[in-house]
Length: 113
Ligand code: SF4
Image (tube, rainbow, N blue to C red; front, side, top):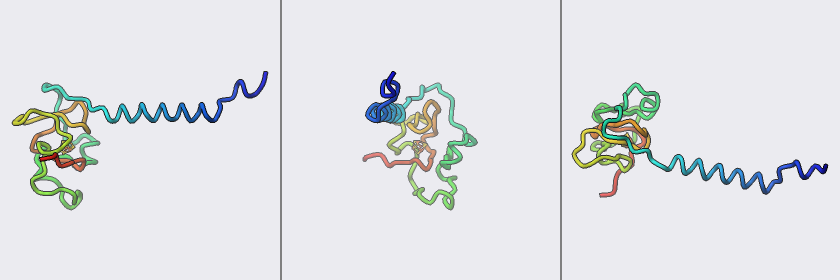
């Protein structure tokens, strides 16, 4: 038995790595739309805390999150997923949990006008 028949070639290893990377990117890049009756994100959620999420954007800790700008709220964030006027909606960061339309977190990306 030759060693080469049992050895993963460098090319195969690179192919596996590329496939794994592609599947990871696809999984991350695929937003999970939260259903209207989905649970609401809690401010004490660890990810919410790390991103400074608040249900009321006026209560964001501006010293800790200096990227916050007045007027930035979930409802005008590119990652927000809801119908116009909905009080709560999905967010591509928080997956299956709803965020408040008047909320904010450090993941905010201004939606195109
Ligand atoms: Fe709100 Fe946007 Fe942060 Fe999601 S990413 S919680 S929609 S500000």
